[in-house]
Amino acid sequence: MHKLVAIYKQPEDTSTFDEHYFHVHAPLAKKMPGLKKIEVTRFTGTPMGDNAPYYLQADLYFSDRSSLDAAMGSKEGRSAAKDVMGFAGKLVTMMVGEVVTEEDLV
Image (tube, rainbow, N blue to C red):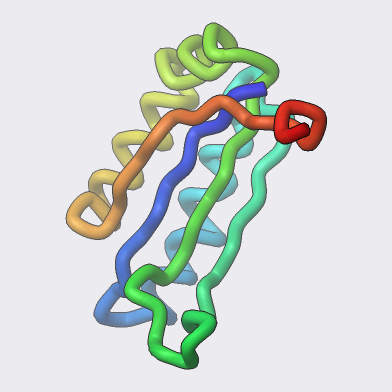
């Protein structure tokens, strides 16, 4: 399994960010072909009690790298990419990763 990971720095206005992310961007991303699952984490702090330097992380899961690449190149993927660059281009870092299973850790 592969995933696209998007990590967002703290926005200036979290309510405006949340409104756009959850009501515009996430629905666009959910339309990407081959998407198996999406998980979103809102960071609340660090283990030391400090403020987190990041605000949100989104993990979009695909069965394999070719499915992820196809989704990114699709009309839906291009729409989601254009949207994220428009509202959070300076805040977001995106990476692709291969999921390591518990069995792989033994």
